[in-house]
Length: 313
Image: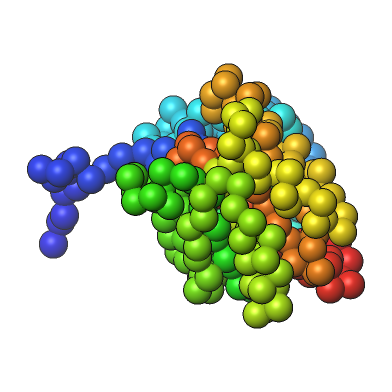
């Protein structure tokens, strides 16, 4: 039975929105094979194919195809590729083709690597079809990818605690949107989030709550609110003296993400450090700042606990 694809009434065919993903170095490798007669391989290696040098042409075609993948596959994103290379392995009954593609973007380059291999194989087919009608393109597949979320994948998930510092939330005047976002964000990534508290700005309970939670086994505590420039923004003055060590890299990453989202983020403060083996991160109280923090922290922050426990990088 033939099935014809089309947009349904809800318009379910759509691109993935990668606006909020972090730009990192991303690498993908793919490979495939084209089977042919031994005499065809001899003609290629002897540069005796009527259309010209087969492998040089196939390499150029693969590079060009990788750069144009978004034009060939409708839902692929346009990417600025920083490097593309193809290699060929002459075998007894065919030619192995491999590709590697690199970028520094917000999404991966798997499709570009695969497209490079397919197009190189098709180019070989086109150039040799007049002398060999038996050719087959086989086993085109992704070999590896790195970068993005997969770069720091680990099965470990810390016990997480969330503290919201806000006079308005504590008084019941407004809903705790930011605290809820943090709980749901870490919870959706399989973290245990059983510790949650709302305190007024500058509450003396903040320090005791952090200490009690650490004694209760909480490994990552994220506070939201009280990091601005106002007279009631006292979170950092309470938490920073508790730090055994400062995690400046986390702070820099959070600052950079915030400034890329909104220019006024430079007016907010934040902090990250270690207290008795637990990581404490203080982020601004706005929902936007919390969403940015989740993008930066998940999943990279999980790798920190491996290091804290004596593991390597």
